[in-house]
Length: 161
Image (cartoon, rainbow, N blue to C red):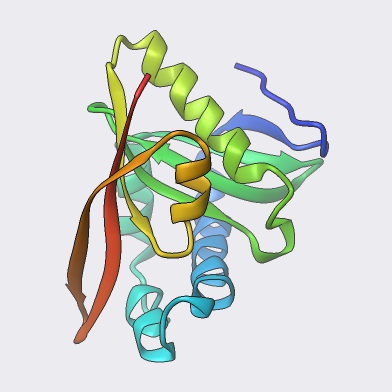
């Protein structure tokens, strides 16, 4: 699958050497973008300094992962499990509002449709909710998730495809 948007971003498949850069992107995105919707303590609980890179890599390895790139620069990534759940979707702070999230969800949707999945689900942060809603997802439930001594709000969202 080769998807490209007007901003020059392209989707490519995940490669094992992406684990470190994707972990760094995850941390940067949470700490610099999600902080507008979550407290400093919540952000640090969500993206702590001591994330186990091997466990993160194993999590990615169990899923279909899409990487949005601009040239050689990673702009974002998304992970789809085998049941239509968008497990992860993060865009680097420097690539916000350039269509990376939309492109990643387009790749996820095309893959899910090709696999015969009837729909997609995700647990979506306050920060990502507007993107998911703009792409046709509906909030099914608000959730309060305990994490490392903090409680974070997110939403279970779904969309038929």
